[in-house]
Image (cartoon, rainbow, N blue to C red):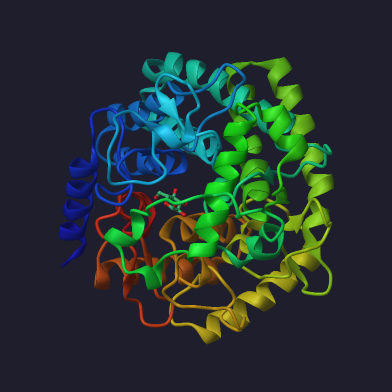
Length: 425
Ligand code: GLC
């Protein structure tokens, strides 16, 4: 397929996964609205339908709770093809939602939507919608500060592996050990009915996911109680970098809208993160890594999330140099950047979800960060690899960094969106 055909195919995928106001990541495996998927999807829609792009984010925020929390899944309609469904979460909300969140990429996306509208000379038309979304985003970012950073370090502490968006990253193995799975009970997974189980998380990982959902439910999804007692509390390097970036983008919007007090608040959040995030630097590994809040131990894993430091705008020459050394080493070991786990790690598995495969959305953030930091040739490699992976293999959920073949579901919305907004340009 040539570029124009791939563009058409990407739009067809978004249209097919559109459920009217929101887009499912994939009709079979993920039949609801997912938080960060929708944000990326909006970037794709923005290439051909601005109205639909804004609506995607606005629909997501309709499910925001009064404390600012924005759920990782919104169950607008039930669907038997997914576990755990709405009755397992039992958050007692209308619409029914999950009780955990996901990486906060939305503010950065909204800033891009706004810039694109401005370029088209339509800023006046979209300004009221920007104002409304700004308040929603601000409330969500405050929620992160209040409920996901119990020690006020300027990092994001994930309460569930799903919250990080990198479900089965080996970073969660050691912190997951204290989770008691003995009372999880019987359940039937749906994911392995759709996808080869070699590409999916293991039974033990799933037991832990379910046990944490049961824990949250037992706390009545009270975010304060969960933050104080959850058996899994990990400062996720991915979410921490993403929130720092998102706070900078939200700050730019606050300044533009003349929201002075919010701008002050955001400056404080950015400052805390810029100072505190050094806690996630692993001196022995010379890399950014997640850290277990309960044991204080660094994961010691170099993952794709480690490279989001550029996207976060952390211009630290020495640490950047160390990360570029990792990039060179990893770039020589795989055909396609950026594997979700260091290919030299003994646990690397080229098709198992977040233990090896390349994800287009992560590449978009890494490539954007590298470009902004002036590492032009690395940025081009990451973008070129993403383009080749999609053009040769299709719009898969993820790809093998060695062979390039698709992993997980096909016709994935966010892969199509990243093609339209970035990789295919
Ligand atoms: C998986 C991914 C997560 C994504 C979701 C829907 O759970 O790990 O990042 O949001 O699928 O695509």
